[in-house]
Figure (cartoon, one colour):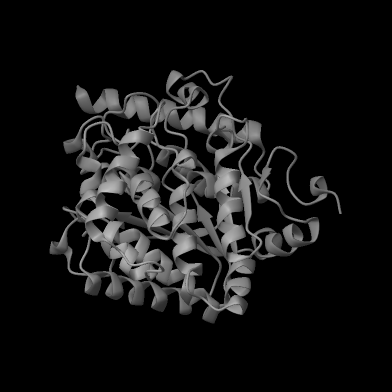
Length: 390
């Protein structure tokens, strides 16, 4: 069956996948009786406090509040008076704005989980650990989290995954998370630093690799270290919970749409590592990665898609077919500079934007209408900002 019969023409396929596999995995997301849940996980890591490591906030101080502000924007929308002001960005606008636009179209029940934050969300949310534990330490420490904390978060996630009763869209907001993604992938033995992106125009790949190398040297992990040991050395709280959740969906059998890029592939690798071959196959059939067009379009020196290389490398290591989809949304003709900045390489992804945009397109929202709604949301956000400053 031609791919054009399965997905909208401008939704891209990331990685190798047959038409039969694609059709099978899209069934729950395109069903007429569709209903699903959205889980946005907010987490923190001291890795984000390094100057220049993340563009999810122009300063280390502002990045401490990015997750709270993004959650508020996603759930409450752009026109409300803000409890948590959006942090200043070098360019662009929070991807939570795009996620909000897609969420308005979709029949999803949203929920927030908070792990490793210095301040708790105002909205009702899942508490998976004591709120005073705070962010994980920097990956360069080689001791990001105590092992017992990792194991507890993994168990909590596993319980959530095993108890799912509907499909789940999993999203995250973790400033510094692409560095912890590199950390756990490197800890699992992957050499993928050239394929890990970031929220800035020119992601600091050298800085990320140096922090990870320092952490792994200090941790001195043995060859073949377990996923939980790797997480304790160079991970973050979101990864521990999310990897456990993916292990849990083997029992519930519910499909999961991972909204993101390298951070979600790192979580998937953590879940697949150490599983029996049959369980790996079962998990791979339940999972789809959804990302943005801007992240999918990033190229490495030989012209290949960096995200496609990363996805295929994880799939090859664990001998499972992994499917990624990229949204067709572009902002070349947007009337707002903040949205056109996405086309220049800023922001790219976050807060589940890619997964939610892909799902909105699979559920019938056209790309021109998506752009129109994003432009309108940007206007409301600007108007609210002006109003709050007067």
